[in-house]
Image (cartoon, rainbow, N blue to C red; front, side, top):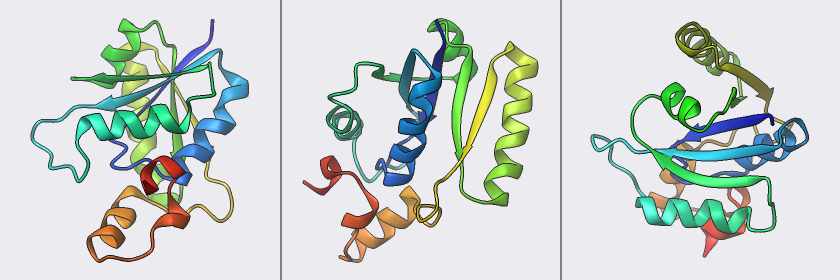
Length: 150
């Protein structure tokens, strides 16, 4: 069974995330959407809301499971028997950052990282931008799935 973990804070999930997840589905038997829990980080949405966003967005997709974890992503992958980490790349900055993490993860655990380039029209979307637009009472609906709009 080919199992992948798509880790993130998903604060909140965006249409960029959805794009990568949906494009990864044909490659894997299961994708675990794994929300990393970092007690030192301040989130706009609490953990329960972020879990709900993910579960509601993918409620009709049996190949997706939503989980939370603490610690290193590769340790979580090993605990779930996942041989792959799924990541999205919006630009060259993401590539430079993710490449080093992917190489380190592989060296530590043998877990491969699979990169998808974000589809055209979605590379400008990030959770950081969405949060900033929300804080300033702007229209963010075109950047997030319906579950976040409610």
